[in-house]
Image (cartoon, rainbow, N blue to C red; front, side):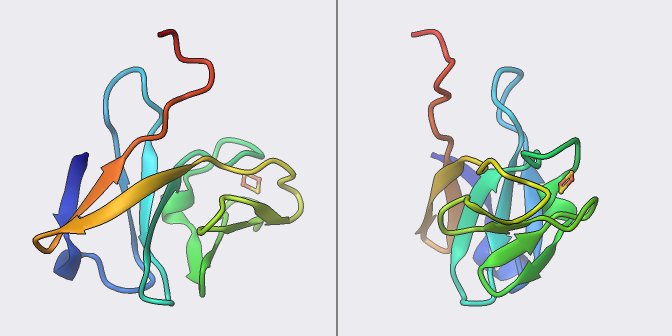
Length: 110
Ligand code: FES
């Protein structure tokens, strides 16, 4: 798992964007308003916008470009214009540090 930050450094309603390597799309890590931590692909499934720059509403994030909503728990697009989900990634808190395990891309070569 990849360490992101101390949980105290990511207030509720905020997000941070992380990059893993040249082959892995950037990941947006959120502290949602339900107190939970969630990670989804940073790139909106509609066009080229960074979800880490969006607006957190409960367990949803609103894309900053055209206001599509994504459920942070499932990655589902719950509001047009986005129709496709974004991938979710596993998160864990270990000794007060938030970690992310990037999901394996379906098009990745084994
Ligand atoms: S780029 Fe996100 S809704 Fe259009």
